[in-house]
Amino acid sequence: MRCPFCGNIDTQVKDSRPAEDHVAIRRRRFCPACGGRFTTYERVQLRDLVVIKSSGRREDFDRDKLERSIRIALQKRPVDPERVDQMVSGIVRRLESMGETDIASKVIGEIVMEALARIDTVAYVRFASVYKNFQEAGDFDKFVSELRPSAPAEE
Image (cartoon, rainbow, N blue to C red; front, side, top):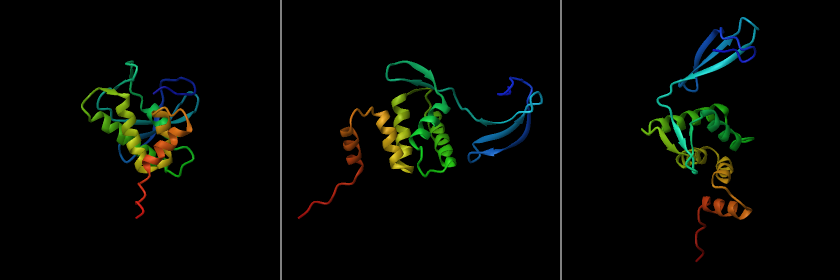
């Protein structure tokens, strides 16, 4: 593993332990050249996924990009970071187990929205505002009104 500080390719593993509910290995590494310490995570990857964008463009699936977008939606929300890691791992496992290597970005967005709706409705609305491309405040009103249960009819 290359040192992120000096670029040395000869780094040493100092400690390994399970992480993210035993779906990853967390490794503490040390660079003998510069003395830097850093952490890496090792995960099982069942297959290489390709995302098909709505424009038809194809790009490799990027777990970090998925995690960043979820963390942005959850910013300043009372959700444990470990819960976010578990959610991301669950989404990735679900995508990998679909049996397809090509996955439409729309499918990924729907799966993320489904997961966010279960853990935090504010993050769900934030993510939806970008995913569904809200253009004005009325788009928020309409979306949030669909979330609320209907009020019982007065007799």
